[in-house]
Each structure stands twice: as structure tokens, then as C-alpha cells.
Length: 257
Image 1 (cartoon, rainbow, N blue to C red):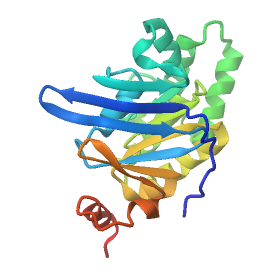
Image 2 (image 1 turned 30 degrees about the vertical axis):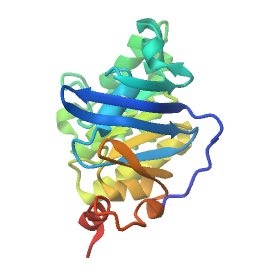
Image 3 (image 1 turned 120 degrees about the vertical axis):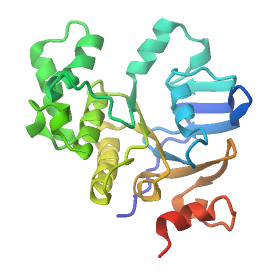
Image 4 (image 1 turned 45 degrees about the horizontal axis):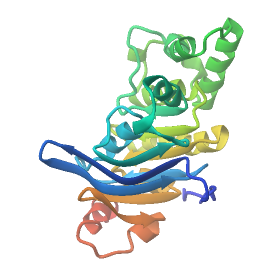
């Protein structure tokens, strides 16, 4: 299914990055990148393994410090805010981890309740139950509420991981390889869920992936990360309308007949 282009507010980005650099000893991962994420859009960051895609979203969420450059998230420069302010900002950002990051010793219900109880002081049992039911309904897994993570399929674990992120009603969603390790049918279901989350919860999202089907189905814009910089940005068709030897094999691997 083709992704319908969402016209976000391109005058007021919710994330604005300028001149971002990050190295690990002599390995220069990000070499001065610029990036804007606009309100209400899904932005896909494409790139090969090891190109710095996950490093980028860890910097955005304050899990890694930048070496150089400015990173503004919801109007705040993450390098210039206190630990208290950073913690408050992180509550407004949903981070969907590649491995779902569920607590194996907790039921689905307890996994979903945990961030609410930890971050929403004074929340009532009725409010907790209502929030849990809403996000489980959103990901289509209401029936799993009393199951353990070990009883879920890989796709279900991904969905519950997204539900746990949504329960704090974040303004920004960061997806790290959301379709990794899933079969093709489940990948399509996760892609559809990402689009539904965008519409239902009015999120702005960065989707890190090397899966071109995911990129094509979910991305309003695509940015290709190559050699530590964004080399091509636009719609899916615009990004791949090139004979660049660094880009074409990416397309051929995914789509060539």
C-alpha cells in the first residue's frame, strides 16, 4: 500500500539538527549532519548497518552526547539542559527499541503499567486501567493483557513494545529497526501500525531502518545516510531516482526481480 504524504507544519520543526558530529576514537560516524523533523510527519532514516542511524536517535533522546553541533528537540537544546529537564523531555519522546525491551518477569499489563506508575505521580487505578486498555486496543492486542512476554510472538512483542511507549502519550516517536527479524506479513502489519500511530496519536516520528519496504510504506520523507552524512532526502521515488553506486545496490537488494 502506498504511503499517503502527510503535509506537516514545515515552519516549526519538532527536531532540528545542525552540524552534528559524533566519533568513537578514530571512527567518525556522523560527519556534520543537518536534519529537521516536522510536526505530524514520519521521517525515515535509511542506511547500511554501522552508518550511525541508531547513534543518531540515541543522541536525539539524550542517551549519547554529541561531539559537535546543535540538537534541538521540542524547542530545547539537549546539550544545554539540566538532567532534570532532560528527564522531563524524554517523557515526551517515545523510544521503540529494536528488541522491544519488555521485562520478561512481568505480564503485559505490568509492563504497560510500569512507565505510568514511574512517571505519573498520583495517577489512579482507574486511570491506569483506562490507559492500558487504550494502548492495547491501539496495537490490536487487548487479549494479551495477562500474558507473559515469553508467550508472545516476535510481532506481538514489537506491538507491546510500541504500546508501552505510547502509554505516556509522547509527542515524538523514535523507531529503531521496527521490522528487524520479522516475517514479511508481520512486517506489513508493523508498518501499518506505525502509520496508524501517526494518525491516531498525532505523533511526529523518526524511523530508523534498512528495510526499503518499511521505508516506502511509512515514510513521508526519506533521508539516506551515507558516509556519515545525509546524501539524499525527499520522497521514496526522489531518493532512488539516481545512478549513485552507493544508493542503487540498496534498492536492488530489496526490490530487484
